Image (cartoon, rainbow over all chains, first blue to last red; front, side):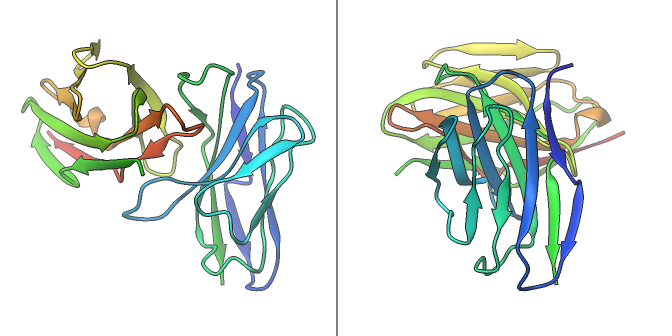
Length: 113
Length: 110
């Protein structure tokens, strides 16, 4: 079955360490996205990529970095510069149609202490 | 700037008690309005896309409607398994990503 796989489901890190969240999709979608979700807040866009080797900052990109070397993969690195990294991170993808719905993975919950 | 406001923040219903969730939006040209369902600890699950005022879509006990300023998600005779957070999002003419509201947390009790 096609879908989006995020791993790991839970991730724990010490403050000051960089950490990379994995996102893989086998839906043959061109566009991929990273959102952050905090309690009581909507999903906020971190980065998005419409094609391989190209990506754009979203509303809250500071302290994050991404790469898009393969169509199937869009890893997110949470750097030590991110002031409040503890959150639920969601990866999504969609095909070229700009009216197409996003398909989401099941998220990674990152806890930084 | 696009804005999406969902109300109420939380809603508690008895099983069988129909109600509606609201999504008000301000956007510079609407390309689509999307409804998602999210269960705790999971990613959002797509429900509906609405493109123009007057459009309606249905799926089981859910019906989504759209006007020029807001969308409603009507839940008819809900069951406990309908308990979830319902998210509304808009895609504008100039945007490449969905802009989400904060969601409505629905609890349906037996």
